[in-house]
Image (cartoon, rainbow, N blue to C red; front, side, top):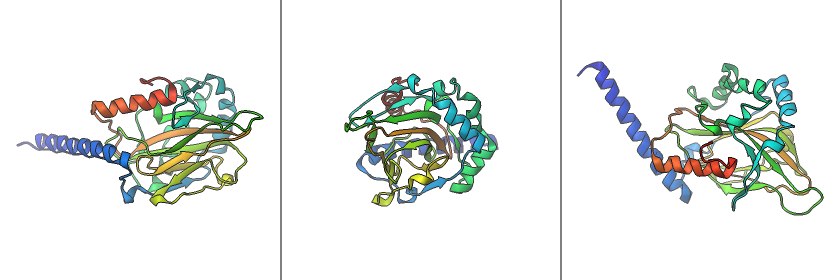
Length: 252
């Protein structure tokens, strides 16, 4: 057998094992079965150059009206998918998220030398999320319940939340993580221009409901150390449901 054929067989075997492992993981994490080795999280402060951060703040201020509101039993909020976000007036500033400088910051923080953004075809690679509360009312506003994400990637999946605006009454972030079953509270002063990076399909997380006049704007990012998408049709359907819940478009 030639070396080329042997290499192809090894790659196919690697893909098959990864597909089986991913299917099993998505099945059991619904019941809270996760890896203890995947409970770490990282906070990368000043992750964007100041001029990029300021440019994004200015650009997203006019995008609220273009975002889609989709409320469900576990989530309330507004979002703009990656394809629309990349076509908006924020586009000049979004290229930094694909730069070597940005990716090297992620790899340095996590120690994962192959960590990279997922393919651009995935609208979740880079999306914009708005959370609001009714003005002058005590009615509960936007937020998400405790949950873990699913994954359609054969490698480890890393979610990133970059805070642009956290105009809230609390001293801690509305974003809460629960690694190892313990709630982690992130000081609010640590949030602006900081990226919270965690394995969302292993770590429980939520966004506490906003209250009177509060406002929160974040960029959601998605990374993987092996960003190959599954061929499993059931997992692809899961992703379509997530896209519908966030962006109102199953094909987003």
